[in-house]
Image (cartoon, rainbow, N blue to C red; front, side):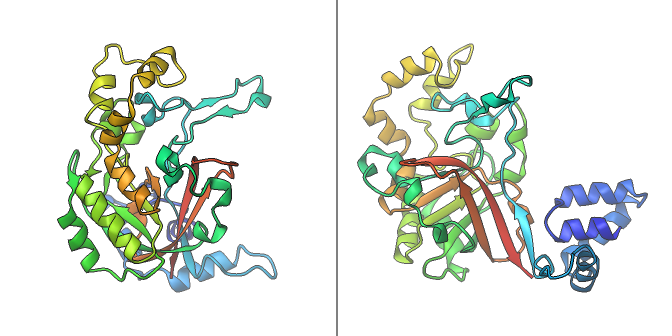
Length: 324
């Protein structure tokens, strides 16, 4: 039981996973819920966690987990299905053949949880690239947690942004972790279009309001559990998803032909919300999962993209560090 409690409090076991493991030990569902609630309230943490975790350490090792929780917010990469592959701009995630592992993997820059820079857009191509981003921008970055609960297909408006920010300790230089609840629904594990096409999303005005608020506080990193920062429903989604059978993602011939007809005017209309953040110099991370595990209003964030020379985006791993 102590091992399970330690794994949950140290962020290695999700809330759902902890509950299931408790029931598997023979506890009734009611007893498991009671223990889970006590752990969430902090009634079982400090002494229990220190006592159990310190016994696992060798001489000289610091008791880091006793002082913080590490929370995994990254969408797992699954070669059988990745939800972004419904879009023409996606690159399918492919593992090497089992008998030929030296072939490596194929992965898109926006596969799963991903960091995207303003330089993704032609108008900002001369701005910072991935290999130029200072580590301190991405490692243990002070972050304010913004809660704007949304259901399937709902927009984030300027009023939503104003109401959420008014109650926060939003400090100069903070990154922003915007939590809607969408990444906790786990639609990303299910084949189909619902996770991407049904995601809550910014209105252009809502994106502009948040971008302006961030710029005023010298904040240049937005992380969110939305599947898309900009929802391309004016052209790309209706044109691409209406095809039967659905065409394959890039680099298929179908995607190549479609993207040749996808004009800059269409792109600007579809991606106006993302452009609002790019104009403010804001880097964005989308498709976070497990954000409900974050309990405190402020955390430190670790974002780990690939160190791509001249890269404008990268799939990445994101971990929240929650101080005890």
